Length: 251
Image 1 (cartoon, rainbow, N blue to C red):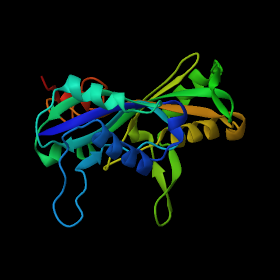
Image 2 (cartoon, rainbow, N blue to C red):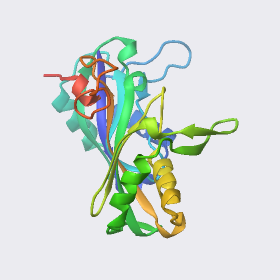
Image 3 (cartoon, one colour):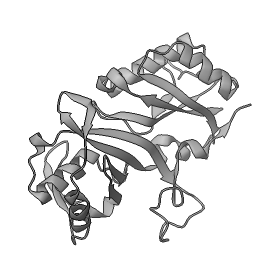
Image 4 (cartoon, rainbow, N blue to C red):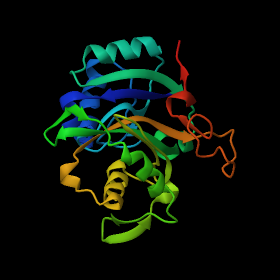
Protein backbone atom coordinates (compact mmCIF):
# COMPACT_ATOMS: atom_id res chain seq x y z
CA UNK A 1 0.00 0.00 0.00
CA UNK A 2 1.17 3.52 -0.78
CA UNK A 3 0.21 6.61 1.17
CA UNK A 4 0.52 10.37 0.64
CA UNK A 5 1.17 12.64 3.60
CA UNK A 6 0.32 16.34 3.55
CA UNK A 7 1.92 18.67 6.08
CA UNK A 8 2.29 22.32 7.05
CA UNK A 9 5.60 24.09 7.63
CA UNK A 10 5.56 27.37 9.55
CA UNK A 11 7.30 29.52 12.17
CA UNK A 12 11.02 28.97 12.76
CA UNK A 13 10.89 25.67 10.85
CA UNK A 14 10.80 27.67 7.62
CA UNK A 15 14.58 28.01 8.01
CA UNK A 16 15.07 24.21 7.92
CA UNK A 17 16.27 22.99 4.53
CA UNK A 18 14.86 20.11 2.50
CA UNK A 19 17.46 17.49 3.50
CA UNK A 20 16.89 18.22 7.19
CA UNK A 21 13.12 17.94 6.67
CA UNK A 22 13.68 14.48 5.14
CA UNK A 23 15.77 13.40 8.13
CA UNK A 24 13.19 14.88 10.49
CA UNK A 25 10.38 12.78 8.98
CA UNK A 26 12.51 9.64 9.10
CA UNK A 27 12.63 10.10 12.88
CA UNK A 28 8.90 10.89 12.97
CA UNK A 29 8.14 7.60 11.16
CA UNK A 30 10.02 5.66 13.84
CA UNK A 31 8.74 7.56 16.87
CA UNK A 32 5.18 7.65 15.53
CA UNK A 33 5.29 3.89 14.83
CA UNK A 34 4.21 4.27 11.21
CA UNK A 35 4.62 0.89 9.39
CA UNK A 36 6.79 2.32 6.61
CA UNK A 37 8.54 -0.02 4.17
CA UNK A 38 12.32 -0.14 3.65
CA UNK A 39 14.42 -0.89 0.59
CA UNK A 40 16.38 -4.16 0.47
CA UNK A 41 20.13 -4.69 0.28
CA UNK A 42 23.01 -3.96 2.66
CA UNK A 43 21.95 -0.40 3.41
CA UNK A 44 18.14 -0.31 3.67
CA UNK A 45 16.40 3.05 3.88
CA UNK A 46 12.80 4.20 4.17
CA UNK A 47 10.84 4.34 0.93
CA UNK A 48 9.91 8.01 0.93
CA UNK A 49 9.75 10.62 -1.86
CA UNK A 50 8.87 14.31 -1.62
CA UNK A 51 6.71 15.96 -4.27
CA UNK A 52 8.18 19.46 -4.54
CA UNK A 53 10.99 20.59 -2.18
CA UNK A 54 10.31 23.91 -0.46
CA UNK A 55 12.87 26.72 -0.46
CA UNK A 56 14.44 27.88 2.80
CA UNK A 57 12.51 30.78 4.35
CA UNK A 58 9.22 29.85 2.64
CA UNK A 59 6.27 28.72 4.77
CA UNK A 60 3.58 26.38 3.50
CA UNK A 61 0.15 24.86 4.14
CA UNK A 62 0.52 22.21 1.43
CA UNK A 63 3.66 20.04 1.40
CA UNK A 64 3.58 16.38 0.36
CA UNK A 65 5.58 13.18 0.43
CA UNK A 66 4.71 9.60 -0.51
CA UNK A 67 5.63 6.45 1.41
CA UNK A 68 5.13 2.70 1.11
CA UNK A 69 3.53 0.79 3.98
CA UNK A 70 4.12 -2.77 5.15
CA UNK A 71 0.61 -2.93 6.61
CA UNK A 72 -2.53 -0.82 6.71
CA UNK A 73 -3.06 1.97 9.24
CA UNK A 74 -6.09 4.26 9.40
CA UNK A 75 -5.63 7.84 8.27
CA UNK A 76 -6.87 9.20 11.59
CA UNK A 77 -4.48 7.07 13.64
CA UNK A 78 -1.48 7.88 11.44
CA UNK A 79 -2.08 11.65 11.64
CA UNK A 80 -2.56 11.49 15.42
CA UNK A 81 0.55 9.37 16.05
CA UNK A 82 2.79 11.57 13.90
CA UNK A 83 1.57 14.85 15.37
CA UNK A 84 2.20 13.53 18.90
CA UNK A 85 5.93 13.37 18.19
CA UNK A 86 6.18 16.55 16.09
CA UNK A 87 8.10 19.68 17.01
CA UNK A 88 6.32 23.03 16.72
CA UNK A 89 6.53 24.36 13.17
CA UNK A 90 5.55 21.20 11.28
CA UNK A 91 2.10 19.61 11.42
CA UNK A 92 0.65 16.67 9.47
CA UNK A 93 -2.66 17.60 7.86
CA UNK A 94 -3.74 14.41 6.11
CA UNK A 95 -2.76 10.81 5.33
CA UNK A 96 -4.40 9.19 2.29
CA UNK A 97 -4.00 6.04 0.23
CA UNK A 98 -2.79 6.55 -3.37
CA UNK A 99 -2.51 4.24 -6.41
CA UNK A 100 0.40 1.77 -6.56
CA UNK A 101 1.38 3.04 -10.04
CA UNK A 102 4.87 4.62 -9.92
CA UNK A 103 3.77 7.12 -12.56
CA UNK A 104 1.33 8.56 -10.02
CA UNK A 105 3.95 9.53 -7.42
CA UNK A 106 3.79 13.11 -6.17
CA UNK A 107 7.25 13.81 -7.58
CA UNK A 108 6.10 12.72 -11.06
CA UNK A 109 2.65 14.30 -11.28
CA UNK A 110 3.29 17.74 -9.71
CA UNK A 111 2.35 20.40 -12.26
CA UNK A 112 1.61 23.63 -10.36
CA UNK A 113 1.67 25.42 -7.02
CA UNK A 114 -0.01 28.52 -5.65
CA UNK A 115 1.54 31.14 -3.38
CA UNK A 116 0.56 34.05 -1.18
CA UNK A 117 3.08 36.89 -1.30
CA UNK A 118 3.11 39.65 1.33
CA UNK A 119 5.24 42.77 1.72
CA UNK A 120 7.21 42.78 4.97
CA UNK A 121 8.06 45.86 7.04
CA UNK A 122 11.67 44.66 7.07
CA UNK A 123 13.78 41.79 5.73
CA UNK A 124 14.27 40.58 9.32
CA UNK A 125 10.61 39.84 10.03
CA UNK A 126 7.67 38.52 8.02
CA UNK A 127 5.18 38.97 10.87
CA UNK A 128 4.36 42.65 10.23
CA UNK A 129 3.13 43.23 6.70
CA UNK A 130 2.59 46.36 4.63
CA UNK A 131 -0.37 47.15 2.42
CA UNK A 132 0.16 46.59 -1.30
CA UNK A 133 0.41 49.96 -3.13
CA UNK A 134 -2.83 50.53 -5.06
CA UNK A 135 -0.93 51.17 -8.29
CA UNK A 136 0.49 47.64 -8.25
CA UNK A 137 -2.83 46.12 -9.37
CA UNK A 138 -2.78 48.15 -12.59
CA UNK A 139 0.92 47.46 -13.05
CA UNK A 140 0.30 43.72 -12.68
CA UNK A 141 -2.20 43.81 -15.54
CA UNK A 142 0.35 45.62 -17.71
CA UNK A 143 3.06 43.18 -16.63
CA UNK A 144 0.98 40.17 -17.72
CA UNK A 145 -0.11 41.82 -20.98
CA UNK A 146 3.46 41.76 -22.29
CA UNK A 147 4.06 39.47 -25.24
CA UNK A 148 6.96 37.90 -23.36
CA UNK A 149 8.32 38.11 -19.82
CA UNK A 150 11.98 37.26 -20.23
CA UNK A 151 14.22 36.63 -17.21
CA UNK A 152 17.68 35.21 -16.66
CA UNK A 153 17.26 31.83 -14.99
CA UNK A 154 20.21 30.11 -13.34
CA UNK A 155 20.86 26.43 -14.14
CA UNK A 156 23.37 24.03 -12.59
CA UNK A 157 25.96 24.85 -15.26
CA UNK A 158 25.12 28.32 -16.53
CA UNK A 159 22.47 31.00 -16.95
CA UNK A 160 19.95 31.37 -19.76
CA UNK A 161 17.12 33.64 -20.80
CA UNK A 162 13.67 32.14 -20.33
CA UNK A 163 10.19 33.41 -21.17
CA UNK A 164 8.26 32.78 -17.96
CA UNK A 165 4.90 34.14 -19.13
CA UNK A 166 3.50 30.70 -20.16
CA UNK A 167 4.36 29.44 -16.67
CA UNK A 168 2.32 32.13 -14.87
CA UNK A 169 -1.20 30.69 -14.76
CA UNK A 170 -2.64 33.45 -12.58
CA UNK A 171 -1.56 36.60 -10.74
CA UNK A 172 -3.88 38.72 -8.62
CA UNK A 173 -3.01 41.75 -6.52
CA UNK A 174 -5.08 42.46 -3.41
CA UNK A 175 -4.85 45.02 -0.62
CA UNK A 176 -2.51 42.99 1.59
CA UNK A 177 -1.32 40.10 -0.57
CA UNK A 178 -0.43 39.00 -4.07
CA UNK A 179 -1.69 35.62 -5.27
CA UNK A 180 0.43 33.62 -7.73
CA UNK A 181 -0.49 30.37 -9.45
CA UNK A 182 2.62 29.01 -11.17
CA UNK A 183 3.94 26.00 -13.06
CA UNK A 184 5.85 23.58 -10.83
CA UNK A 185 7.40 20.16 -11.18
CA UNK A 186 9.91 18.39 -13.40
CA UNK A 187 8.61 19.70 -16.75
CA UNK A 188 8.36 23.40 -15.87
CA UNK A 189 9.21 24.94 -12.54
CA UNK A 190 8.81 28.63 -11.72
CA UNK A 191 9.68 30.03 -8.31
CA UNK A 192 7.59 32.91 -6.91
CA UNK A 193 10.62 35.04 -6.03
CA UNK A 194 11.68 35.03 -9.69
CA UNK A 195 8.23 36.27 -10.75
CA UNK A 196 8.20 39.02 -8.14
CA UNK A 197 11.75 40.04 -9.03
CA UNK A 198 10.69 40.41 -12.68
CA UNK A 199 7.59 42.35 -11.59
CA UNK A 200 9.63 44.79 -9.47
CA UNK A 201 12.08 45.28 -12.35
CA UNK A 202 9.13 46.00 -14.64
CA UNK A 203 7.91 48.69 -12.23
CA UNK A 204 11.42 50.07 -11.66
CA UNK A 205 11.26 49.24 -7.95
CA UNK A 206 14.22 48.44 -5.70
CA UNK A 207 14.10 44.81 -4.46
CA UNK A 208 15.94 45.69 -1.25
CA UNK A 209 13.31 48.29 -0.35
CA UNK A 210 10.47 45.82 -0.90
CA UNK A 211 11.20 42.72 1.23
CA UNK A 212 8.67 39.93 0.74
CA UNK A 213 7.49 36.76 2.41
CA UNK A 214 6.40 33.76 0.33
CA UNK A 215 3.84 31.21 1.53
CA UNK A 216 2.98 28.14 -0.52
CA UNK A 217 -0.71 27.35 -0.26
CA UNK A 218 -0.87 23.99 -2.04
CA UNK A 219 0.62 21.80 -4.76
CA UNK A 220 -1.35 20.57 -7.78
CA UNK A 221 -1.38 17.80 -10.39
CA UNK A 222 -3.08 17.58 -13.76
CA UNK A 223 -6.67 16.39 -13.57
CA UNK A 224 -6.80 13.19 -15.66
CA UNK A 225 -10.44 13.95 -16.52
CA UNK A 226 -9.60 17.27 -18.23
CA UNK A 227 -7.89 17.27 -21.68
CA UNK A 228 -4.43 18.91 -21.68
CA UNK A 229 -5.39 21.21 -24.58
CA UNK A 230 -8.66 22.48 -23.04
CA UNK A 231 -9.24 26.01 -21.75
CA UNK A 232 -9.49 24.65 -18.21
CA UNK A 233 -6.17 22.75 -18.33
CA UNK A 234 -4.37 25.35 -16.20
CA UNK A 235 -7.31 26.38 -14.02
CA UNK A 236 -7.06 25.71 -10.29
CA UNK A 237 -9.71 23.26 -9.11
CA UNK A 238 -10.57 22.15 -12.65
CA UNK A 239 -7.67 21.20 -14.90
CA UNK A 240 -5.34 21.21 -11.91
CA UNK A 241 -6.30 19.53 -8.62
CA UNK A 242 -4.48 19.17 -5.28
CA UNK A 243 -2.29 16.12 -4.71
CA UNK A 244 -4.36 15.37 -1.61
CA UNK A 245 -7.57 15.06 -3.65
CA UNK A 246 -6.10 12.21 -5.73
CA UNK A 247 -5.98 9.92 -2.69
CA UNK A 248 -8.63 8.42 -0.42
CA UNK A 249 -8.94 8.23 3.34
CA UNK A 250 -7.94 4.92 4.94
CA UNK A 251 -10.65 3.79 7.36
